[in-house]
Length: 213
Image (tube, rainbow, N blue to C red; front, side):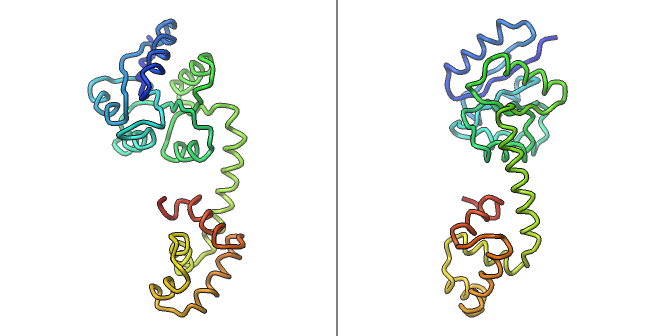
């Protein structure tokens, strides 16, 4: 039985190209197309693909928002992100949400075919060239987790306010403590998370999703 595919991408040329490639392979059948995230979710109410090929950069709703919605509402479709983004943060975010596969648009069709079949077998497929970066980032996040556990609740509050752009005086006012006490807290915080200044502290906070950007 052919694997039923749906393609969600805001570029019609990409959709048409992918559809043509899949139609040449009798193991697959393209049963739906969508031009943005909302269109994708609307179409999924009418068609039931086995695999959704999902772009990240789309209008109305992006691919990660679509993926989050699908997982939140437990919609049964396997999701393979097909994107130009080779930045590891996108892959990390998609992995955390629960994507089934992630490959780049510059891949050959043979690899795309392999990815679709792999996730149909219940495996997770990550483009091999991205795996070393993913492993490095996972180690970094594991190290960060240990650092976060060392912070007290008050230190975590101060770190978030610092990363949101508040000055020492503003933090002191909000926390109802002196500026000197804020400085002492920051010295301990920087030591615990292994940074030397406010900029790197902010990067640490953003990397660990402690504040929205």
